[in-house]
Length: 202
Image (cartoon, rainbow, N blue to C red; front, side):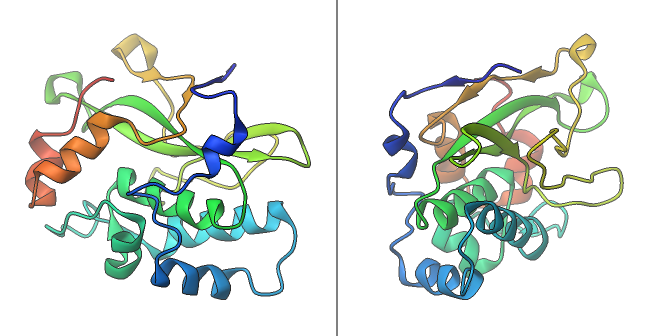
């Protein structure tokens, strides 16, 4: 896929935002813990990705009602849906000067079109030593989901079925999409939000 960047300035993919609050104390503590004695940007990207993928639970998988949005909230609660997990991964990497953006897919919410569609979030990371963007999906692995770190071929959580109106959006956003922030801020029960209120398109 040929990516489209929402900004041509890589510095925009390093900014601290309300949701990407990487100067927060808990984020800074985790950054020091994760990256102690780690120098390579590739190593940092892989470590951060695997931490968020494996150590931060997907809220729906654990059937928790907790809604998290800010990266610091996700880390403190150790859970979030894909939107929130993408915020945490961006915060950890932006804190280390690694440009990180947000990508989205339109997927069937469950297993058939009749059950509706939702927007799924993942990240794009700019690897300066390779002069390329790579996409990573830290949603969290389980049966039939096996997302991995790779710089040569994408190993994402979901394969798009275009015949069923699923979409892989090519845009790499420097900020989380407003529809994503809106839904997280408007709801206090993650399970109800996930089943009935996730945006179905961008």
